[in-house]
Amino acid sequence: MTLVAGLRAAAYGVPFQPVGGVHGSDLAALNGWRKVKDPYGSGEEVYVIPAIRPDVAVIHVNAVDEHGNARVLGSPFWDHPLTRAAKRVLVTAERLVPTATLAAQPELTLVPGFMVEAAAIVPRGAWPGSMHPDYEIDYAAVESYLRDEDGALEAHLNAAPEIV
Image 1 (cartoon, helix red, strand yellow):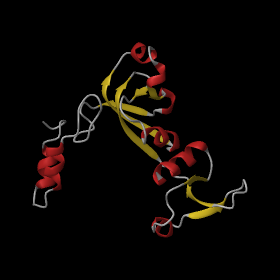
Image 2 (image 1 turned 90 degrees about the horizontal axis):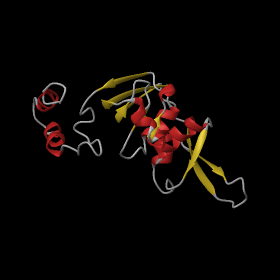
Image 3 (image 1 turned 120 degrees about the horizontal axis):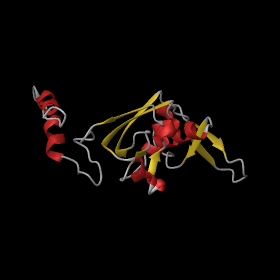
C-alpha cells in the first residue's frame, strides 16, 4: 500500500500521499517517512509517503490496438497508478486487436494510447506469472528458477516462451 500511495501522489501531482497501517512498524523509520497532523482537527497524525515518479513504466496487458490503447482484463491495482505516475509508458501485450474491439467497451481500456510511447506484441510475456484470463502462474517454472543450484536461472531463461 505504501508503494501505491507514492505512485498515486505522483499521478495526482501532489508531493505526498497519506497512508494508514504503518504505525507500529519499522518501515517509517527505515524509509524516513514523516507524519502530518490531521488538518481537520482530529489531532491524529498520519504517515505520508513521498511521491514516486518512475522514469519509465513497463506493463504487460492482454490487448493493445495500433494506437497504443491498452486493456488489462485482470487486476489493474498496480498498473493504473504506475502508468499515471511514470514519465514514459511502454506496453507489452499478449495480442494486437482492432481498435473497434477496444472501442466497443472503452471503459475497459486501462491506458489510453496517448500515454503509451511504444508497444510490442509479446505472447505469454507475463510468464512465469499470470495474465488473467489467458493463463495462470506457472508454479513449476517459478520453483525451478528459485532452486539454489548452478545453472538454475539459465535453465529457466532458456525455457521462456520467447526462446522455446
